[in-house]
Image (tube, rainbow, N blue to C red; front, side):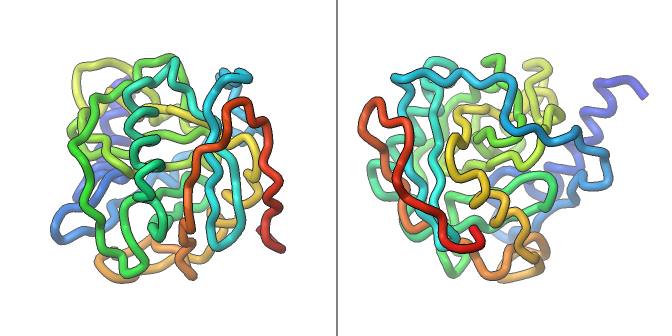
Length: 236
């Protein structure tokens, strides 16, 4: 099967009846996943890391522990600016990671503890053609079928997921998802979230982790901060 046709089939699995990486519609339900597709071997960190001493970082405090994300404004300026606006407004406080697919990704940043979506600002233009790949530990913007529909949701890749990368600008199926950062500390917490049991809950028919991992806060760290002294909780 030609590579482009394979990619279109994968996108169809991810995007119907609602995009795998976006806010669901009025009557949301999670679509089928690609867990049956063999995933690349996980790496300790993405080969496309672009870490610099001046790159902004945020501290994500969750009910399972804390982790640090380094952002790439030079590669995804609109996406990073949008994310930081939500961060500095305290938007993420009390939201949850409502979607966990073991061996694939975790997703959050829109729903509260009652699994009700929070109102968001207008979407930003996609920047998935920035040369970065959805490798283990990278953070990418979630969206609907429309490429230019990124708002507050983000996901963290648990393994290398190059199937989610940019191929071309021909359609939503080939645009991929914008990588705009990387977890540089506390990936064990992300993995702990990714290993939670899941099931149906609220408006979702599957993939909701139990218990719901709550994002207590996301805060921007002082410029030049290389690490945060925030140890993970036991087991995190």
